[in-house]
Length: 434
Image (cartoon, rainbow, N blue to C red; front, side, top):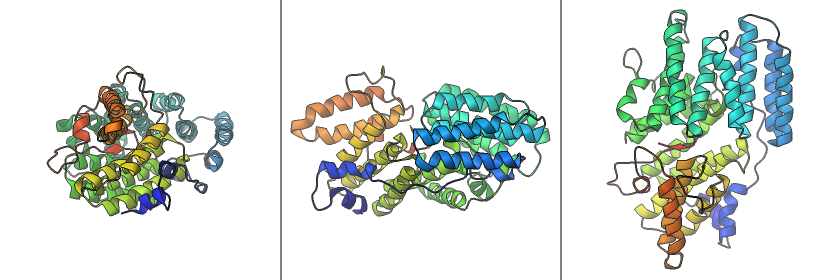
């Protein structure tokens, strides 16, 4: 259980050692293929496909502004050479735009990423799987930006697109493309707390749940969102099975072309990280803290390797690790206050939390609920220390005013008692608390 703590505390315990967790340098990640690692199955210009792979590997090689600029330059050159007409040319242009949107997203430029995705969604000629991938990513980005209503509108448009195209999509991949569109809408409803309307979006034509069988292996986003629904409904055993299938299926990189194409926070690496993080949180909710620590530490390592050690996504995982220690401390009547506080301070720093002087509801806060959850947990640590209670009350006040989750209050999200009917789940794809 003390694997993370031993990294933090070492022979000379102190806050400096605690906050070093998220700043440990990692070896550069190996070059990776883009968009669910499976673009080669598409109807693409083969030279363009190679340029896309090269551009993404170049951008991620150093994870610097310069390397990403170089990668974007290659993609712009690739796009400028696509002048022909027809399905192959349109698919090629669209997937270049998906690649550009993903690189923009990884550098935190969500507005420009949305602009590129919208170009694909508004185009009339790319194949249906490519358009659904763009609209799925638009849903994901709007959710991450806290624009839940906009994400719902996009998800509805995607469903209507599938209705219009159903006659032409009766091929082998059509059921999975339909599942993706429905699951995107299901995720929106899950974020909005509309639990009664969620489950139908994860059912097939024969009432088969999309969590089982081949779909979990061919599109992890569908199964992951359904797993989160099960998790938040406290169906822990089935949720665990679903998460494990997502991790297995995504790790094995099954080749299914259009059915697995993804971009931005819906791409395969994001799905794998989110499923790993969700499984770690689930083990924590089950009281399996040793397993939870191991899984969440793996998620932290992979997140640092993919995004770099100072990315806000690292702050998301650190928040989950801190909450795991909080659950353990409360349930086992132990104390990890130093560990928790160090993790939460580093998490809010990486999440770029605004100053306490800015009112929670009025301040523009990216990843608002995760920041509020982290500050709320930090406040409770401070409030039990008499000489720091004032600081804790200020943090608590800010967190409560910033919290906007529709399913549970902040105090319910922080309630670790066995009698609690609510469990908070942080979805690292969209940086929201479900």
